[in-house]
Length: 480
Image (cartoon, rainbow, N blue to C red; front, side, top):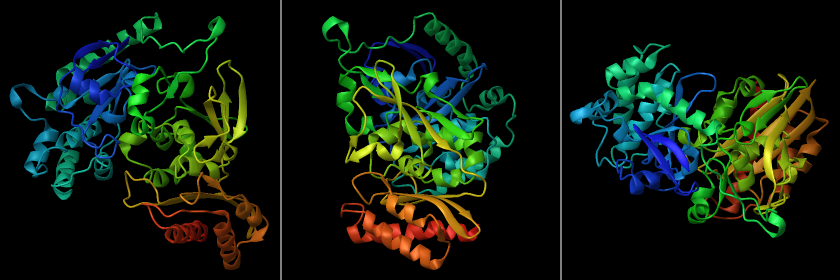
C-alpha cells in the first residue's frame, strides 16, 4: 500500500509501484491539468512538484519532476502537487499564472501548465531567486509555438516579485501573496504522520520476490531508481513486474569524503545532488558548468548516478564523467555479499555488464582530484539541454613541471560501450605538455574508437567531434 498526499488529499493505493505518477494522476484521480506529451521527460508538459520532508526539520523541500517518468512508488510519503493543487478559489490566477498571461506567454496552452509548475517550484525554493536561476527553472520545459522571450519576460517579472520574499519563513509570505494555497502550511505535519506510520510498519508494503524451492528467492525484483531510463525503455514491463524502489532508501543516498580523500556516493544519489553537494563542489569546482550539459533540472532531480551506470548507454554523461575520475563501484548480491569493481571493467559489450543479475550497486567511490589536477568534461548534442550527446568526453590529468604524470581520458558515442581510452591515457603518462604530444594523443585516440553512423551523426563526424573535444581538454589546461 502506497500512502502520499496529492494536493490536499491523502492517497492510499495498491496501484503498481512501477506505474507512472502521470497515469495515476490523470486516469485514477482524473486530474487532467497535467498533460501527456512525449512520455520521455523531454517536453515538460507533465511537470508536477514533489515535496519531501527535510531530515531533522519540519519543512518540506519541493522539486519539479516530470511525472511521466516518476514511478508511482517514489511518491510514497511525499506531497505531490499538480496545477489543480495550486489554483486559487473562484478562478483567480496565481502570480506565476498572471505573469505568463501579462507577457503573452501562452498560445496553444498545452505546455503552459508545465511552465507554471516549474516556476512555482522555483518560488518555493529556499535559495535566492536570481535572473539566472529563474530561467534555469524552466530548462526542462519546451514551448513549441509561443517562443521563449515572452516566457523569459514573465520569469523576470516573477523574479522581481520574489526579491520581497523573506529568506527564513517564506511559506506564509508565498501563501499570503497567492503563490500557493494556505493548506501548504499543514503539509509538514501531515507528512510527519505518514513517516511515523511507516516507522511502525504501516507504510508501503514491498512486493515479495518470486521464490523457488525451500522459499529461496529466485531473482531480485526489478530494481527501480529515478525511472528516467526504464520508464522510457519498457514502461509496460516495469508496471507489470515486482519492483524494488531504490530512490527513497536512506542507505543509498548521501555524499561524503573520507579522511583518506576518497569521495563516496550512495548509489541513489541524483545528478542534482551532485550539483548541490559541497563535497563535490570542493573537489570539482567546475562541476556546475559540466552538469548544466546533463539533461534538465527536473531530470537531474530524478535520475540517479548508479542508474546512469547500469543503463550502460554508450553515451551516458555521468558514466563518462566518472570513468575519467577513476571511479569504482561496490556491488551487493541478494545474500548481502559485496565486491568492488572498477567502473571501467563493468562494460563488456553493448548493454552487457560484468555483474550477476542479483547484484546491485550500493556505492560509488573515487579519489578526489588535488587542487592542481585538471579535470574537464565536454559534450556536443543537437541542443544544449534535454538531449543525448552525439559525442561526450572527460579528462583527468596530473601535470607537474610541464610533464603529464598521469592521465585518464574517457569518451562516449564512439563505440558500443562507454570507453576509457586506456592506450591513449597510458601513453600520455610521462609525456611533456606540448602541441606535439597533443597531436600524437589525438591520433592514438582515433585508433581506440569505433563509431558508427546513426541519427546523431556519421562515423566521420563523430571522429571529428572527438578530436575537437579532446583538443578542448588541453585548451582548458592552457587557460588554467
